[in-house]
Length: 238
Image: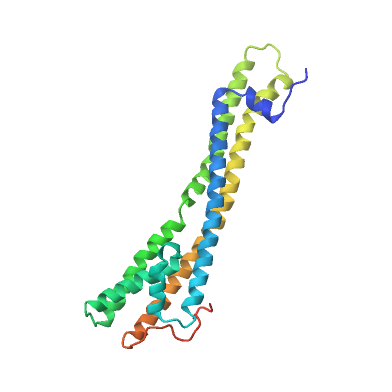
């Protein structure tokens, strides 16, 4: 007896539990792909904004002018520019209070930048834990559907006196589709998670380096009348 073992027929003939597992995995897969594309575009935008601000920062423009531009462009600025603005804002507030101790001024600016840094890193890492969960849980959800489907298939075969490969194959094939869908959902999520984690680490390192460089500039200019990066180029080569 010829039986239709196409994927569609296997899904339609599966038990309702296996179908529910498949539906859940398909929804998770679609959601993870949407998260992957959102994160991909978001990271590209973050890198572009950081690079643009870093070039402007080391172009010789005064820090006061950069701070004024950052205040006007707050909604469209990147993480590095917002960290810079938070440090300058705290620095100027302390100067307005007539605090002249260099250590106090520098420590206040650094703490403000560190707090802003944590907020920016948390924002960049949005949806990363979701991809990790999809990558680690989806295969087990698919395996659950497979085990349930095989149990259901063998339960149905118990009433038969003669069991052949033709009678066993459809039930097992239906069950294995759940594992296949689970892997289809998990593999892209794992690959994307590893890629994004590496990119986010690079962004975080770049932001930490900027905090140190900006702190050094503030320290050098504490006794000066003009606040401007010196040298025209980033010590890190940017």
